[in-house]
Image (cartoon, rainbow, N blue to C red; front, side, top):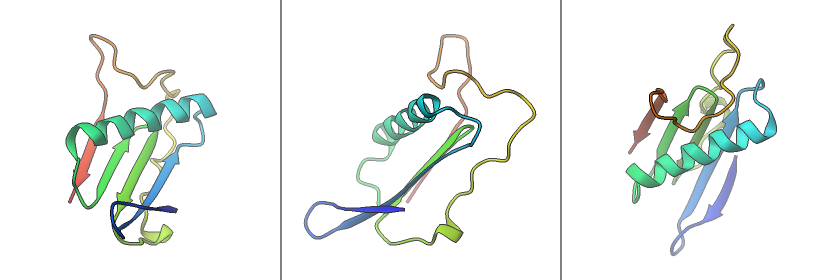
Length: 99
């Protein structure tokens, strides 16, 4: 978990996670996509949680425990998708939770 200063004296606490089966470039792609989704729906929110098949992104205005953080999804028996960006005719599973 990391923290950073926000506007004024606010501090944001954040956590990113990827499933172990993703390569580093795949993890980065997944996290970038998740963070971009946050900017589309959740600007000005106090906390956001984005759950994707391969990664999770969370930020809050309060410090949250790693023990209460989102755990990565369990490994599945199917191979991980090679790309997380949406292609025409494909489905992207994305769950956004904001407060």
